[in-house]
Length: 271
Image (tube, rainbow, N blue to C red; front, side, top):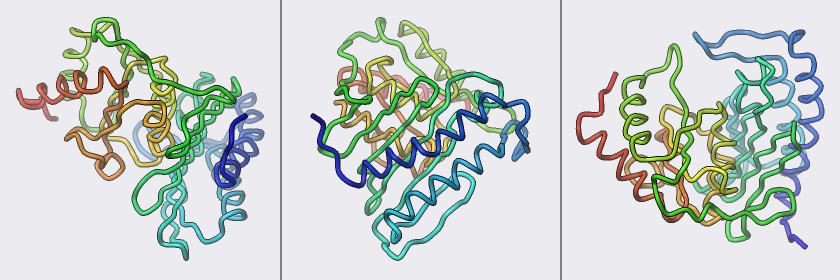
């Protein structure tokens, strides 16, 4: 029997409620209104509706907490210590192309630290959730990071910068180094699910730069509570501020981190 806090129950309930409309929209994706925020950066009416439901449900339960949201931006709360960090659809491009790999991501930050996270993949009803000190779970099953110890047996996930985003040459340098030392790289288009998959042992690790706080806030505590490590590219804990992350199991975080550091020390190929 899993014992969950009232706050985590609120997060999970909000994600499930918002997902009901999201699944309907996914079935009618060709009819959705879609606008372009950047050269390859989309926002759909589904993003906006999902974020509205999440905000309403979370605000109803914890009215003093602030928000940081992908579409709605920053909203200050009367409780300066707590804020929700929300991505209504992490993997919007997948969603709009009919690819069933996207998630709702909710992180709860307290005094600058993520203390609870929910990543809900509604197509397969996979609810990843974790609280600091209480473990990480997929639905009712306890999660543990992969036990693989060798880089050449490991699968790593990443994100590829697309049109309008910097970092193409750096990514190629990183990917070349990781490919030469691993069993493979995957790019599925959802940072939140990449982190959740590391927590579940599906990947050994994940790295990415040029991402936003709402992309990774829900997943950071998942990896840590499943026994893994999450840092920025300097080995510190400023992932949300710097927009970069290196996450892996307890055996391979250091090798992955050291490999990526060596690429940057050797020149790094900045754009």
